[in-house]
Amino acid sequence: MQHHGDCVAMSSASNNDETKRKSLKELFSQNPSTPAVLEQTREICATYLGGTWETLKTNQIKLRVQEGGMNNYNFVVSLPDDVQTTEKEPRCALLRIYCNMDADEVTVETVIVALLSQKSLGPQLLGIFPGGRLEEFIPSRILTNEEFCNPFVAYEIGRILAYVHSLEMPITKRPRLMHIAEGMMKRLRQAPRWSNSHKMRTTLAKVDPALCPEMITIDILAEELEIAKKCLEKSGSPIVFTNNDVHEGNLLLRDGIEVTKEGLRGRQPGVDPIILIDYEYGSYYYRGFDLSHYCVECCQDNTNKEWPYYHIMQQQWPNEQHQRIYINGYLDKADEITKLNGAKRPQCIADLPVDREAATQRMLKEIRQFAAFPQLLWAIWSFRQAEDYPCEYDFVEYGFDRMAMYYSWKPEMLRYLDGCSS
Picture 1 (spheres, one colour):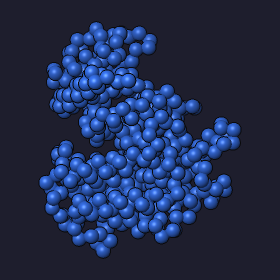
Picture 2: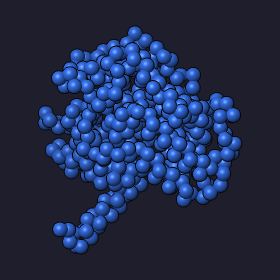
Picture 3: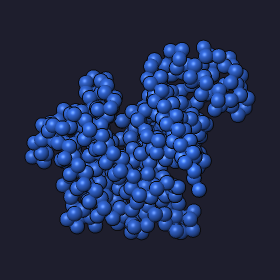
Picture 4: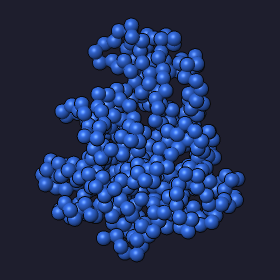
């Protein structure tokens, strides 16, 4: 039985961890070369990496920003070249500082990352602390949008997703992503901006205005979320373990690998050339969400150096041949898993016909009919970002552009309610 004193102690520890998370976030929002940031980095590395890292002075720590993260501060921390290490000590590590994750989200992602690292599906976990974690640094870089849209890369991503979708994870099996969206909606209802209605508009998206309402309100967002929920419940897409954030910034291309029009050059036997990272939104959800998310993100790019600091390229939606290559990667990997399981098909393909062409047709339709929901989810996310994390990136306009693309795909999603999912 838990005593009152135990509960108070647990509550106090939780509050203390939350305070540490906030202070780390504030500290690491500064220039990484400031003495305070370097000293905190040294302390974290000394504590969780030990060995040689414990002997370093603050001015010996090398720290640089790692590009690609929108939800966390990511840094590469390394030893000076003249410092010797033992064989098992890392010379580099990736330091992640959480920015906008609550305690439950941190717990879930930490469990996921730890288990995936044991399966060699991601970086090795080196340390966990309130407010962040240390990971193995994999010599690599994030994919560019052009590489992400390459059909050979699509094939590899399909293989990765099939493997991820086949995993059993000790986390809630209830669809957490909708709960996250509802939490973001709750935050928007508290924001003065959303006590008003807003004229529907686009900055970069090209969408028929007749598909969109004239105004966007918080109640309309809530209504669209409810419609999407009903559609997806009718989809028949199996609920599997999903990443829910597949885009180029969450995919690492190992050093030595080159993406070309002829394929991936420089790959080594038994080593995956591309690694999917960042499971902040990892949960059990519909297979169709991850499948469609790849195609949706082919049309987005956050590397624009001028306002509004993103690109929308609707013309880059993968054509059917491209999608078939992507699906072939998924089904090829699923077939390999089936053989390893003694002919037992994993949950991620258990609903599909055994015939390859029939299965492909089902997945092509699933990609189309799920394409609206990622747009709605990230529109709501973007509006929330604008409230809590204001910066030069125009999250408000980005949100409206994604709403426009949601409405352009909504008729496909509504086919689930019309009984046209098969």
